[in-house]
Amino acid sequence: MKNEIFVRVLRQLSTQGHPMLVELKNGETFNGHLVNCDNWMNLTLREVIQTSPEGDRFWRLPECYIRGNTIKYLRVPDEIIEMVKEDAIRQRQTTGGTGRGRGTRGGGGGRGGRGNANRGGGAGGRGGGSRGDRPRRGG
Image 1 (cartoon, rainbow, N blue to C red):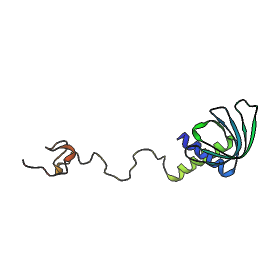
Image 2 (tube, rainbow, N blue to C red):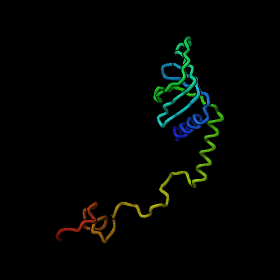
Image 3 (cartoon, rainbow, N blue to C red):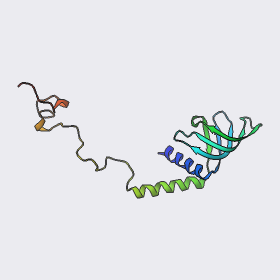
Image 4 (cartoon, rainbow, N blue to C red):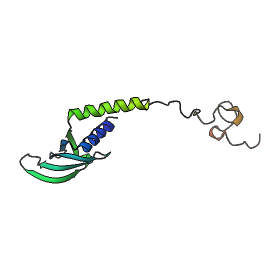
C-alpha cells in the first residue's frame, strides 16, 4: 500500500515537472525535474546536476535515467505527498469501499461440492472427496 502511494506521488510529480533530489546507494546525488516514473521506481530526470559521492565534483546532464533499485533516498515536496493522500481518500470514497474482504459478489463459493448429498462425495457420503462429481463404479 505505501509503495503504491509513493509511486502515485512520483507520477503526480512527473506530470507537473517538479524538481527533486535523488540519492543513490553509492552516494551520488541527482537534482533535476522528474519526467517519468514506472512501477519499479525507475526515474527519468531532466536538467540534472549530478554530484559525486565525495561532493567535490559536479556534472550537468540534459537527461538521465536512474534504475529504481539503486535509489537510497528521494526528497519530495510535502505538499505533493499530502495532495496524493487526499486524492486516494477521495477515490476510495467514490468507489464505495476499501477493496478488502470477500464482499458479496459471486455468491456460492465454498469448498467445491463437499457435503452435497446428491453428489455422492463429501463429508457424510461414501465418496472420494474431490471426486464427488464423478459417478461411482459398483457398489
